[in-house]
Length: 122
Image (cartoon, rainbow, N blue to C red):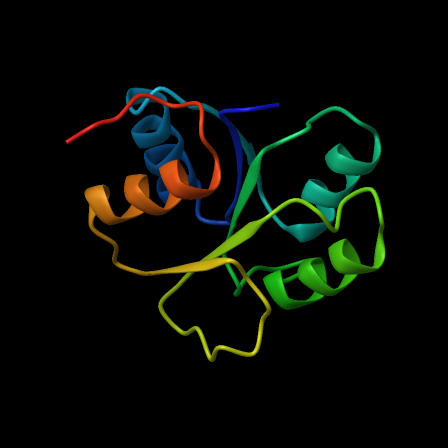
């Protein structure tokens, strides 16, 4: 679904803030608390995002494990991922990266590039 972004982040404040920013940018944002919850929603077909914003350090299932499982599933592997992390070691294959703490415009720029469908916000 064009313009829909899944935010996979365990910190509820960060997750809600990112979703609010995306909403203001014209995107539909949906959240998941960890990789396991995100995979459940994706595999059940509850969410069909154009892009996944992924934190790496989370309980239950971290971002690295999520990405490995996502890439093994042909139905999910095509969904681009942007890693949002303060401690990105570059080992996770991703279409983009946003360092925490991030600037709002930097986040919207990378999302707009990879998930067309939102409004242009400057």
